[in-house]
Length: 260
Image (cartoon, rainbow, N blue to C red; front, side):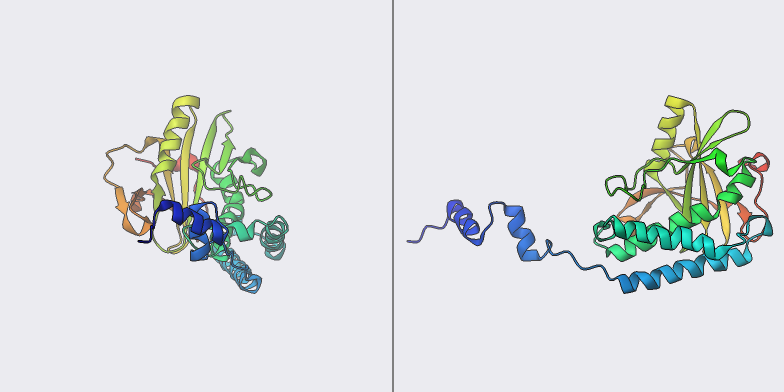
């Protein structure tokens, strides 16, 4: 009688060249084979990023238009892409099995919208752009810090010596949500440092912008929902009443916004 037991299993895998079960599984599933990044595809995606920014720049109010849009695109698309490529970050980008080119494109859209609207933010909060500090964890020179975290993107030094954290979000499909961990982090920050957090959500699909005080969202708010297409995550759905700015008009002053 042939004895087939776990000892044989282990010896068999060792003969295949594996001392670890997970490595054996990866080998047979091909998960250790990293796909080559299609840089021709990325060139096309970069062209689309330029188109997005140029279309936005055509329709926003003159007070926030960028005069030299080509230089802006070169600095914020071409140069950033070259830096990511040089650091070898693009092949390591992955999220729920998506190709790195698609993850790159998603990240770049958000990065571009944040940088494009810095002038608008300075007008909204009545501060110089130099008083808006980038504090998020997406540092393009280091893959270890190039991660999604609850930390807000910006910190604004207001004229009354107060600070406010800004979570800048971009929506492109007409679905406008805030992830639960962003709210949890905002409440923690307010408890520990007495700093308020504000989500500014750019709904590019509908041309509107929402302002949501994150640390004031109640746990029993009716806008908390479960979003099935996001693997059942709990999110705060941004009600239409939070949208205070039409992108085709001049940015509102923060002091004039009605949050009630």
